[in-house]
Each structure stands twice: as C-alpha cells, then as structure tokens.
Length: 553
Image 1 (cartoon, rainbow, N blue to C red):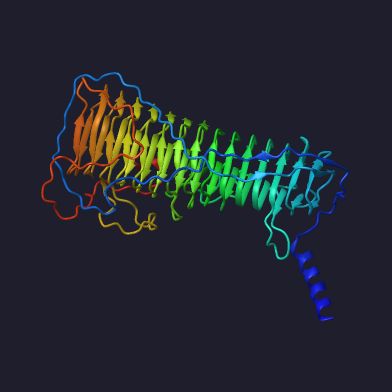
Image 2 (tube, rainbow, N blue to C red; image 1 turned 90 degrees about the vertical axis):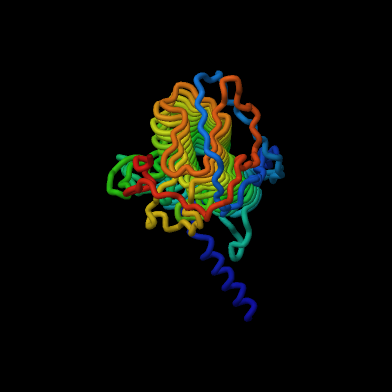
C-alpha cells in the first residue's frame, strides 16, 4: 500500500510539473512513416586560443629614448585583409531517420519522437502553443502561421522532461514556420543538437513603446528566437525583425548562427549572454536601436542597443562575415559592465556601415581581436577601453566623424596594418580619469590603468583632418613604420608621453604587408635605469556619463 501511494503521488506531482495543457489539444497519432535525411551540423571552428607574447600584467614601466621623425612624401599602400582559419571541431549530428508522420492542426504537447507537420494556420489560445518534451522531433510548419495571444508565451517551448525534469531534449528541428505576436517566437529552454531554420519569427514582443522609447540596456526580453542552456545548436535562414531581440543565446555553447536576418529590433539583432565557443557568421543586421534617458537625463538614441552584442562572459567566439548596416546603436559590441568578462573573441571580415556610435566597441576584457573588417560612417570605427592584449589588424576604416581607432586606459594592445582615411583622427591612445561610481566594478590597478606598452605599426593613415597618431598621457608605446599622407599633423604628443618611441617610415620604405597574429613586443633600444612604478598623469575629467560617446574626446 505504501508503494502504491508513492506511485500515485509521483504521478500527481508529474502532472503538476508539466505545465498547463492548452485548451484545444490535437490527438497526435502517426499516419505513416517519413524518412528524414540526417543533417550534419558542421561549424568551421571553435577559435583557437592564442597567447600574446607581451609584457606581464603589472610590468614596471621603463622609459626609452623618445624620437619623432617627419616625412615629406609617402608611398601608396593598400592594407591587406588577413585570413584567420580556426581549426575544425567536432559537432553533433541530427540523426532522426524513419520517424512516424504526425499531422497537427492545433496547439499540443509533444511527448514522442516523430515528424510533426502543421496542416493549417492556428492561433495560440492562451500562452504557449507547442511544448516539445521528447528527443528526435522534427516540426515542420509547412509555411503556416502561428499567431500569439497579446504577446504572451511562446509558439514553441522546448523544455526538459521526465521526472523531475532531468532529461534534456536532443535532436530537435523546427522549420518553415511563421510566428508572430508571442513573447518569444521559439524558446529552447534546454537542449542538445537543436536545429532551427527557414522560419519567419518577426513581430514578437518589443519592450519599447511606439516611439521606440525604452530603458537603457541592461537586459531585455522578448523577440524572435531564444536558445537557453543549449549545447550544440544551429539557427540559419531565419528572419527575426521588429522585436526586442532578434536572436538571443544565453548560457549556451557550440551554437552556430548563420545566414539569418535580424533587423529593426529595439535592443539587439543578435545577442550572446554567457555563451562560448560559438559562431555568428554571414548574418544581416540593420537598424537595431532605441531611445532612452541617458545617465545625465538627456533623451537620445543608442542606449547600448546594436547589431551584434557579446556580453556577460561570452568568450572564445567568432563573429565573421556579417553585414551590419543602417541605424544600429553600435555595430558589434563586446560589453562587460558589471558582468563577467568576454575574452578571446575574434571579430573578422565584417562589413559595418553607419552605426550611430561605434563600428566595433570592446571594453574591460582581454585578448579580443578585430581583424580585416570594413567600417565606414560612424563616430568611432573601433573603440576599446580598460582592455589588455587587444589586437586590431588589417581593418579598413573610413569617414569617421571622430576617430578611426580610439583606446582609453589600455595596455599591451597591437594596432597593425590598418588603413584609416578621412576621419578626424586616425589613431588615438589616451589615459583619462573615470567616474569611480559608474566604474565601481573595476578591480584595483597598481598603475592606475595606465595607457601603456602598446604597439602602433604598419598602418596607412591618410586624409585625417586633425592627426594621424595622437598620444595623450600614454606611455611606453612603440609607434613604428606607419605611413602618413595628407593628415592635419602626422604625430601629436601631449601630456605625459614618457618612453614613447616613434619611427616614421621614410619615403623609400613600405610597411610590411605580412602581419603576424601575435607579435613579440620588443623594448626600445635604450634601457636606462628604471624609475619607480609610473602611474598615469591626470588629464581631463569625463562627466557626467562616461558611456556616452559625446563625453569621449
């Protein structure tokens, strides 16, 4: 009797855990067997983890002989894009052959393997429409529409199953669906080997008002597709427009987002949170932006919205070959404000046009690389601050209203082989104060986050109205073999520039076209007795909102 009571209690508890059953549930009975061609999910990476051969994190700053050489003429040089090929990786295979065919005409819970095919357009009666709680499921909407109820719930909710929710759905495919008016179109709340493709997931929840006014980001919820705790997944040929987030990946790994369109979202086109060893490639993201009240009370657009963002511990990812165009707040953004760092990411061969603020922005982390990107028409082409061992190589940057490359309080960065034209300043490295309250997440620094020990080499800097290279309170840098033409001035030094070594290319020399991935930083020729540890010299004070580009020089 005790045993029987336990079984009955377990069944009651299980029925309570699985969630509400929709008011109208189809009888899912197999009608025939369908042979499904297995799909191999084959990425081109994960990226390699490279170790920069550089000075140690807290190296004593040793000044070297400072010299500035000017030239009267410059050879014509073209920056070369650098191919980076990460090593191949193993990836799970979607093997779901010989599945029974089940036709579906209304919302339902799916508990068994099968090839499920939607036969008509449907409306979600309450919150969620289809629950998938099984392995080896293919759901084909056959181009039918699933319309939500007042932006609540999910059209598809893939979730763990069994007692007590210990089994993770594996081998799930969702395709050919038109989903709108839900909180999130497709929500995968745990899964392995997930394949979502050829869906239109537009017009789901947007957390701003009709004027696109919302909160400063922070976080956002709602939109087209969300992968949450997914290991091994692929989303491709989906459209996710007009929501808060187009495609949202959280706490996941080995995910590929490829050939999707995510535009006119109010937060981000594509968002990675605490997700690693993943690839974002060949996507198109446009016009992802919102208005908000900035920290100083000014209402404006941007608000940390953007085309593609990696945040809160998203490391070892590749972002390559994407088109990031139109009115994005930032183009590609690696963000770590009050969150875990995003390290060792590669941003390569993307085309970024007309971002409101920065084509690429990196902050507070290390060993991130921006290589071979084409950036035009923003405020700053590439902006990074409080970073270490950052590599900026082979980018073509033009028509910036402020800087081609701007670096604040950064050490051991390499800026090599870039072509920067028609901007206010081509390259700007500086140290400056920061708001201790807004930057309270920064750990103590023995040198006060000095701008130091950076290498600026083999760049072509042409037609920049104020300066080619500007160093302000930036020390122990090596500015080597750059080519200048038609700049307001070629080199501008101000404040504390102790130990900077500057060598300008003579007219007969050409910057080296071959760029090594991780150059060894070599000290200057002179090696005097080292002084006590230097700290950065105070410059201007940034107020009141250091995140806003209007407060950056």
